[in-house]
Length: 440
Ligand code: ATP
Image (tube, rainbow, N blue to C red; front, side, top):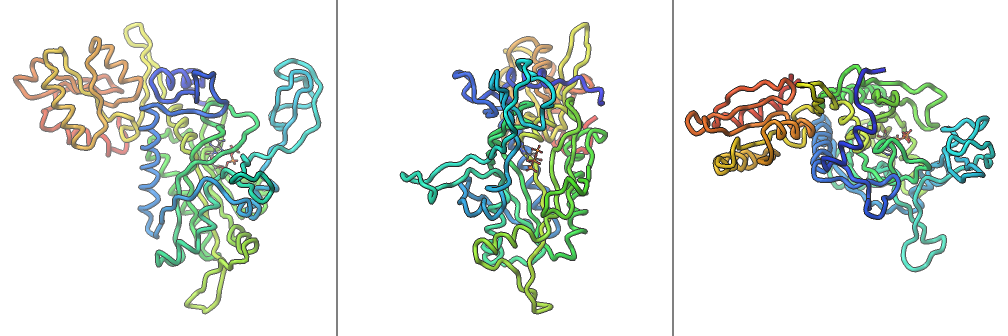
């Protein structure tokens, strides 16, 4: 196990305290498995999505973007196999009525909640949220909230190809909401009922699928390292043959070592031609592609990369969380890589008399495109601690000497070291820090 001081309870409390994440509808006692993101959480989510898109669209081959609908026609989910197969086994305790995923409890033992041993039979529980379109609630109007974003990529494959003059190999990437009626949402953002996915489907010839699969595994690992995640807590775990979905040729999970064990962060799969073949069959529209060289048609194969925004959000928090004793007190610090931190810098006047000068500096950094916070309440020490706790990598303090030497004190979050930096160098200072591979 890793020696992290982070626990789920500490992360949940920090998220609430500092405005990263709130339980949804908290004043009405919340909605299980659903969360709202506060100001800092929204910035962090947007950063995650921006960095993901940057990696996707910088690939040598074309990767185009899509924004598909959340409501999905039932035909789509029949073709994909979700209507029939997307379910988890569940059992209920007959005494306290608590519901469990059958693979989470030992049915030979007593209910962990009430201690009795009277279980219902194991039943399959459909994980998709079903709704009906329009006024008539009959079977012809059934629609589903999508449980993954990938299917809208497959059903739009031909549209995207024909309207963008792209040739195989190319990818389609999408970020969007997904919904799963998880039987037992748990571990905070790890298993939610409403979440966002970042998915990319890469279409290629069958004979190239293995090498694109390897390439995307390497690229995705590099992405997580680049975000600053500790290398010894990230690993690629190939699925064993009996673990593979029936349509999958190969699958690697990117796993992270959470305090509750090694868990999937992202799935990378070689899905062969399963998806396009299924949709061709069910829709009656041929999704095969004509090869100009061989003058034959073929069904493209697909390499998929799929990760949850919030699961990565939680991972970044666990990875960055640290505590250390400073002057007899515990200092809590999020050691985010500067490009991940919600604020790149904080600007502080030493005294309220210096508000105008410090505030002008803050506005300049904002205009330069950086996310910065102005903080003028409480002692400087308290302000530093507040910024440490939200992961701000540097604080610039404007003091009385600044009036003379046109410099501010730059205080480093990780080392707590201070240095004087010329005001006209601040933009450069922040930019330099954000592009460094490693902060310390
Ligand atoms: P798990 O085994 O954890 O249920 P899965 O194999 O069903 O996951 P996929 O269908 O492969 O998950 O989904 C791809 C990614 O979407 C996951 O790696 C995860 O990052 C994210 N994800 C899936 N379900 C949830 C959820 N309920 N809450 C948050 N993120 C999720």
